[in-house]
Image (cartoon, rainbow, N blue to C red):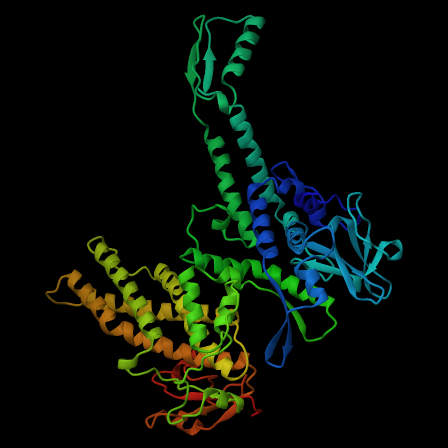
Length: 630
């Protein structure tokens, strides 16, 4: 049985009418069912892309112990979930079906076959149209299973009434705790328009009779002559394969050319609209299903766009798989994980750069890296390097000794100019590049009356460019601190905060630039407008870029410490004042200890916390983190 056929199923027998199970008429005059929706290219592309991407991910199992994770290499249930759920299909096909069902019908179902001891023996996918959820008199959720003729699952329950503990129910977005809503049912108007436009295009080319137009003959044709002329014309010219063949007319007949009507052209254009419309409802980037006409906000490169797809689209489905499938496990701290890291690796250079950072800062060994690249381990490859410079001033103790004490610290101030960190250089170079592009744009517009900075466009552009280095910086620093505290760091948990900070920094940078341009162009003097603009950007590239970069790295470095410590399970933090010329409020706070989730008395969670901007400028304080209770 093909995967598409199993995805489609048949019409439901339930009296509970849900959009995903009933073909519903649309304003385009088409009744949309899952079968028909897959004939629309955008729907098929979205379902195929998401289901195959999700089903191809490696699956792992781990125990969550305190703040650490211990991988489980072998387990009978892991074998079912990762390799072969039952003798008929492999695991990839099972999860492809489940994700596809969620996207088409809003629900996916997997029956749990148990052995005599109550353990999980096999997993069997069942079409959503073969299942009707019910509630018993005491409110228990059960599933009435009526298998189709071409389905098989060893249902042992009397009357096909399966209790919740023997059924895995994967719901898409919904408005109750019984059934998910069908995207096809909810977007049937868009799908109907797309199907109608597609059918119209097929008929348009099938009936094509180019050269297009009408035949005009003198006088009136007899019935046989009319039929003969019409049939000959269709045989010779109708159909896409007969386009532009030579036309021979006789008996004084003339050809009158016609053109494509505006209505035909407008209707054909709807195909482009419905592709983007359907993609947005499914949460799929339009460029990943072939809609490349418009600009995308998913990133400026292929790698960034791929990461955006995984983070904002695919993860919602793999998260459902992880949480529901966890019901197969009896151990309370055991979890499944669909590992999306493989899709977020980017190109080879970016991947190897990330490995270098991981090995340098001690959270990846040579064999860890070789494992991620599917290579065999090497002898001596399990050693983790220790950065010797990760100590407070005057402290010569080894990093492991400090980690065993349950405390990790790092000064929040940036290194002096002669030893400036690579992250400051990277942020500075990025800003210099942006300032030079803005300079060229403003100089080109002088004389047109529009020599102003396009704030909206540049805010969005600079935000996008700042996210990647911000993510790299915080991943490096937070990962190192989390390692010292005996935990691990997940960069995806900080992505939303970093995006917000990137937008804030971009807005402030562009406001300053726009204000400087306005003052320069409005000032009196003998300088030409071009010279005034040049002076603004000379200052921006030579001094301001470095100052802003230092501030960004300083602020994000303190956030990275806090986030790494939080994810590693730190329980308290202590404010340390390191400057003799610090604010009086900060001097009084020296030694103040609060819980890791609380704010200090100045309203900040860490030095440089942007939520209290009046306390951040010039701050060189730092924070110590510990596993001990405050």
